[in-house]
Amino acid sequence: ECPRTFCDSGEIANDITQGSLLPVILEVVRELRGIFDSSSLIHFGSDERNATQACWKESGKLPDYDIFETRLSDLMAANGWYKPSRVLRWENEEGVKYPHRTGGATHYQYTIPDAIEPQDFGSISINSESNPWTVYCQAREWTTLKPHGLMARMPPNLMTGSTNNKGLLAFVIALSSEFPAMKDPSDLEESISVLCQKLPSSLCADATVKPGRGKPPPRTSNLCRSMTKSSSTPVLRSEPLTSLQMITQ
Image (cartoon, rainbow, N blue to C red; front, side, top):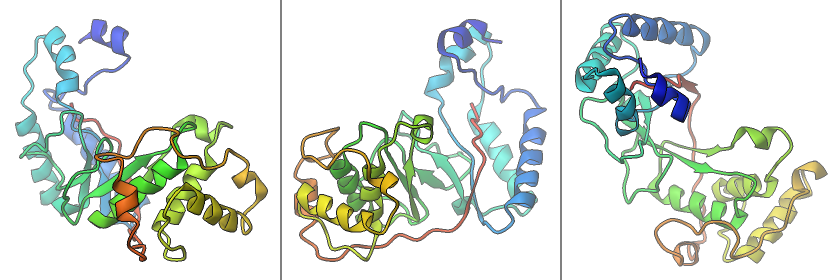
C-alpha cells in the first residue's frame, strides 16, 4: 500500500497490521525447524523501524510494533520453540534494542560495541575493497568481547568472481589458535603465506596485505597495535544457526 516508496527505494515493509502475517511466519518457522532440526538457534532478521516510516506514512496506517512482537514471542513460547536468548535479530541502523522485540540475541552488523550479552553475535563485512589488516583487527577486537559467534559477511559478487581471499584468510587467522597475535601487516602477510602453502593457489591470488588500505578499524586507529600485545588468540565456537531473514516492519 506504499507504491511510491517501493518505486523510490525498491523496498517495502511487511504489513504487521494484517492478522494473516503471524500464521505465515509460524508456518515458515515450523518448516525451518523440520529442516534444521540440529540447531537451537534461529535468526529472525531485521527490526528496522525507522527505515519503514516512509511506507507507513504513505499507507496511512499506524503500526504497533510492540504488540506484533509480543504476540510473536507469545506464540513462539506457546509452541515451545526457541528460548528468547536463542533467537537472533540484526542490529538496526538506529542502534536501538526495542524492549518488546522477539529475540534476546543481537547480531551486530554496523558496530563493534563496548560490551555485549553472552548470546550476542558479531559480523564483519568483507568485500573486494576490504583491507585484510583491517579485517584482522576487527576480528581480533570481536574476540575480546567473546560473542557466541562471529561471521564474515560477503556480498554476492564475492561468489561470482570478484574476490578478496586474503580478507577471508585474515579473518580465519584472527580466530585461529594456530597463529600468534599479529603485530603489523607484514606479520599478517607472512602468516597468510604460511597458510597459503596448505591451500589451493586460487585462494591466494589477490593483492598482498598493505597498511593504509580500506577503512580503519572501528573506535581507534591504535586499536590493533595495543590489542595484539597479547600473545594468545581466543578461538570462537558456535553451533548451527537457522536463518529466517524475516523483516518484521
